Amino acid sequence: MNSRLRVLLVDDELAMRESLAAWLRQDGHQVTKAPGGLEALAEMEHQEFDLALVDIKMPGMDGLELLRRIKDERPDTLVVIITAYGSIESSVEAMKAGASDYLLKPFDPEHLMLLLEKMARQRDMLRENSALRQRLSEGECASYAGLVGQSPAMQAVFDQIEDAAAAMAPVLITGETGTGKEMVARAIHGQGPRAFAPFVTINCGAVTETLLESELFGHERGAFTGAVKARRGRLEMADGGTLFLDEVGEISQKMQVALLRVLEEKRFQRVGGNQYLTSDFRLISATHRDLTELIRQGRFRQDFFYRINVLTIVIPPLRERGEDILPLAEHFLAYFAAQTGKPKPGLDPRAQRALLAYPWPGNVRELRNVIERAVIVSQGSTVGLDKLTFLAPTPEAEPASLTLAEVELAHIRRVLATQGGSVGLAAEVLGIDRSTLSRKIKKAGLRKT
Image (cartoon, rainbow, N blue to C red; front, side):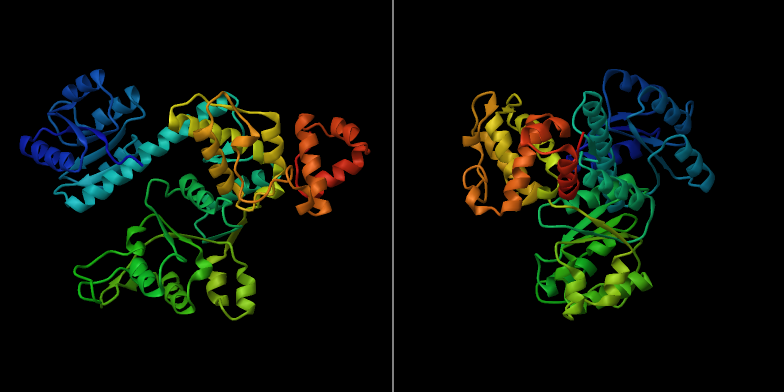
C-alpha cells in the first residue's frame, strides 16, 4: 500500500496550518494549504487531492459547506473534519454529509498518523473497487473483492463472504496451503462495516510462543531482555478493526487459554504490565490443519475452537475447481504483464492443456508463481508450454504418475476446455452419453454449460 497522500489542508488559523503542514510533510505527504473554503475550491480546480483536512469553523464558507461542495464536485476526495469545538451533533452532520472521519484539536501526533494510514487504506480500496468495476464492465472473468473464480464452489465462497461480512461473529477459514485464506479474510473485512479500520495480521506458525505473546499483547519497557521501550501489540493495533490469526492451529494450548480469556473478558494486559487494556476487534482465524483431529489428539482446546469457529468458510483446493484455472491464469498474466511493463501475452493450446491437467499441489499460490515466472522469461506474445515450470511433473509429461481417476478428470477438463465448456460437445468427443458426463462433472465440482 502507498501510504503517501496528496493532502489539501484548509484552516483559517495560520499557526495551525503551518504546524499541521509540517507534521504531514515530515511523514512524506504532499501538502497544499488554503486559508478558507473559496481558496480550497480554487486549488481543487487545478489539481486532485486524496484527502482534504477541513476546519469546521471558518469565516465565510464553513467546513460543513465546503465538505458538501467537495463531495458534489470531487466525490472521490476523502474529507476529514477538524475542529476545536467538537459536538455529537456536528459529528453526525459531518458524517451524513460524507466526511470520512472527525478529528478534535489539539492533535495527538500518533493519532493523526494512524488516521492518515486509515485514509490511505480507504483511498487504495476505493481505487481497487473502481478498477474492479472497470474490469468487470469490460468483460473480465468473474471476481469478488479481488478473488477470481467462476466455479460453483467459489461462487458459494463469495456468498459466504458476504454473509460473514454482515455479521461480527468470529470466522474460521480452512483450506490447504496456497488456497487464498488471507485474501478471503481481507475480503470479509473489506466488505464489512470495519472496512476502513485496521486489518492486523499475524502468522501464528512463524514465531515462537514467547515472541507470539509479545506480538499479540505488547510489552512494557523492561518486561524481558531487549525490551528497551514499551510496545503496542496486535490486539491494541486492531482496535476498531479486524485481527487475523493465520495458522491458528499452531498456537500452543497456553496461548489458546490466554486468547480465550481476551475474547470472553474483552480486556488484557501487556507483557510485564499491570494495567488492563481493552480492544474492540473482529476476529478472523485461518488454518490448513484439521482442528477437530487436533482436538481428538488433545493438541487443541475444544472451548477455544468453539469460540473462534462461530462461522466457517472452507476454501476448496484448486484441483477441485478446474474451471477457475484458466481465468486465474489470465488474471495473473494481465497483472504481471502490467508489473513488468510488457503487453499481456496469451497462452498457447499446449500450455492451456498443461495448466488444466496439472494437479496444483501448491494451489493458487503455485499458479501465481508459475505465471509470474512465465511472464518474466517469455519474449513473444504467447506463453508456450516450455515457459511453464511446475513443482511436480505435469500429467501431460508423465501420465503414469497419476491414478486412473486423475487421468480421467484431467482428460475431461481438457476436452471441456477445447469444446468451450459444452457438455454435449464434450460427450460426443469422449464417446459417452451426456448424462454420464454430467454425473462425472458434478462429482468433480466442474461447471457445465
